[in-house]
Length: 120
Image 1 (cartoon, rainbow, N blue to C red):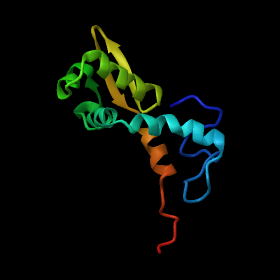
Image 2 (image 1 turned 45 degrees about the vertical axis):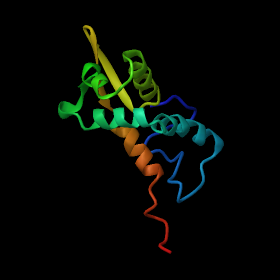
Image 3 (image 1 turned 180 degrees about the horizontal axis):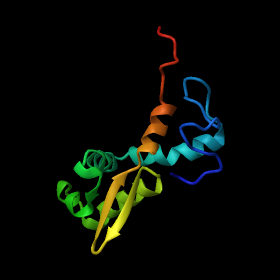
């Protein structure tokens, strides 16, 4: 997950869902890279392809053909997702394999949880 001065885990008491209390500046800085990474349509598609891949991981060679982008551009987008803590990777010979970091999506889902908001 992204480096920060606060602990970003679903069980951490350092933050609470947005509907319960506002984030402080440090918390916002810690979460922002994850949302920024997801704010790009290519990266959102890449994340969804990785998350839905059979076997829990996917080779970069299986991702590049789905886009009208160069290999280096796809690699840049994957790097942004990795630096945001949303995916992890392993190099195996020539290819890099990517897998989702489920705890990161659980963290974002918890932050966006509005179940405690009273209905209008």
